[in-house]
Amino acid sequence: MSDPREPAGRTRSPGRRAYGVDRRRVLGIGGALGALAAGGLTTSAVLARRPAVTGAELRSAVPLPDPYRTPLPVPPVLRPIDTAGGTDRYQVTQHAARVRILPGVDTPMWTYQGAFPGPTIESRRGRPVTVTYRNELPVPTVVHLHGGRTPAASDGYPTDLVLPRGWREPMDGMRHMPGTGGMDDPRAVVTRLTRTHTFPLDQRPTLLWYHDHRMDFTAPAIWRGLAGMHVVRDDAEEALGLPAGPRELPLMITDRAFAADGSLAYPALDPTLRDRPGVPERYLAGVLGDVILVNGAPWPVHEVDAVRYRLRILNASNARHYELEAVTDDGRRLDLVQVGADQGLLAAPVTQRVLPLAPAERYDVVVDFAAVPVGSRVRLRNRLGTGRTREVLAFRVARRATDRSRVPRVLARDLPAWHRGDAVRVRDFAFRAGRMGGGHGWLIGGRPFDPARSDVTARLGDVEVWRLIADVHHPVHLHLVGFRVLSRGGRAPLPSDAGLKDTIALRPGESAEIITRFDGYRGRYLFHCHNAEHEDMGMMANLDIV
Image 1 (spheres, rainbow, N blue to C red):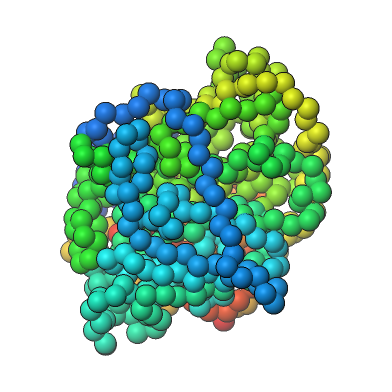
Image 2 (image 1 turned 30 degrees about the vertical axis):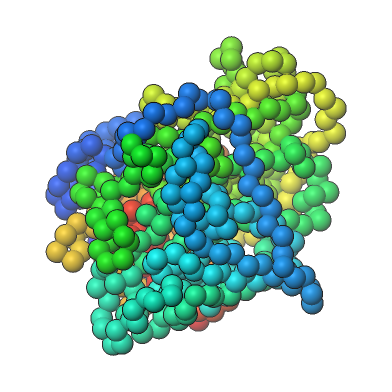
């Protein structure tokens, strides 16, 4: 059995079988964190729960609206400022704004273009996009296009900062310490006020999203509003006949909590997000809110025709996991026909009744409202929630209508056909709690993130198998590349693991195998847990592609 205490990047022969889970070793992690986050749960208590939840919930101090009263907003599509030469050029300003989230209350937020979520960018496969981000916030920022096949210089490495006007210069030669935001990384590319990212978008059509990725402060920056969606399209997908136009809905699901004055509640040790990173120990496993937002609205409702709709679902929550089901007023569950995953269309549809959704995962599903009586509702509910957090979104069926959409039996023929025998190496990685900087943190292979260290070096074009093991819930994300899930716990993948993914939700005590090919670009990238509090507290590692 492979040892999850091995450092990140330790390789094994491709012929070795996947390891199982040593329960005693997993339970031993409880001593490292003491009381592990979710309301004082120890690791053993977390493992004993079914389903498990990783995180502790904040409670709002402001009156909250009743569910399903607020109309679902759809973020506007950003228009390019120029399209000359076959490239679409955009400008986006990051600045503070007051945003109407709760009825009658304006909430101070950090935004892209003054809105939450930020505006959606729509692009065509193979047509390059440039985005110039301007930072008018009081702290440095970094923008990462999650799921993008992006050159390293534009990927949004956590120390490639855009400094606001008047920010102090980084101290040259200083070794990185938590709280410096990575400004002492000798390889960092730091700019002032603006930075232009180039996205070739030579990739499969899918739903991507962009968010802040500043070292040590990703979680509170996303919580304050720095997130938006990016859709890649192509002719082949559009020819399939899937629901389109107003019957294609992008849905960014997040959770938040609110203070008595309507501002966002978040337990940052340093509310200015300038110097001291992290949260109190109670929230080390993740911060959960008690208000579920969809496209920035609390428990919204959307009027639909009695036809098929395509739901492009993104979990942009910091730490909350969801198990979604579509339930009619009379208690029937509708099929969630999955047609896509993180990195685009599946080979064929997969019918789900319950859809697990970890932070940063995206699922593309079709729901057919044809058999739902006009005037009734279908609620999208979260089986992992309690009380109000069980509710997510409602659809009110308003009328009968003609439906010319379809869900073909074959969706995509361009999925990579990687096999175990193609792998030139197998690597083992353990994602677990541990000690960092004299306190508690989250580690990969026993080590916290260090931007100056090389953790994994892969050759461009190589196929590798990675074996992952978790102590608690860890949604593991690889930058640049997509992967296929080969197994979970030595058994077959879940139905929701179909297709090409860039984030895998490891459940408590679970092991999994993934396979990928490191293609696209050379340079320095990341892999990390996308529980945003975990990544801020050390659970990232460097991936150098040479």
